Length: 139
Image (tube, rainbow, N blue to C red):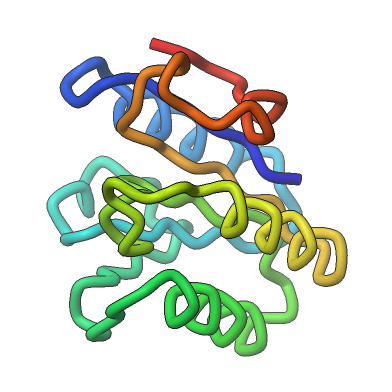
């Protein structure tokens, strides 16, 4: 499953994402990974959540990002959820159409049993129709 938290920059998406991950970690049997563009939110995350600073891995496009995600999943067979803060930035999709990448994440989710929760810095009205069904919070 792929879920989106959407809204323009500064609307509070990261807070919503952090609240969601910190409440889910208490109920989940597997592991959780939180991907971000820095380690800024390290102390706001429950210590059971694995924080990955994507900026350290020289990802240059959405295909490399998806390969990176598959690599993370392959290393942790208990991985149940992945949270992507600043999704457009960490996946190199700023100013681009996210439809194909979200569709591929849905396929990965189905095949591997990992749920993805994405923070997307765009207003709901600016998103492609194909991904609007995935929105859980619009700010």
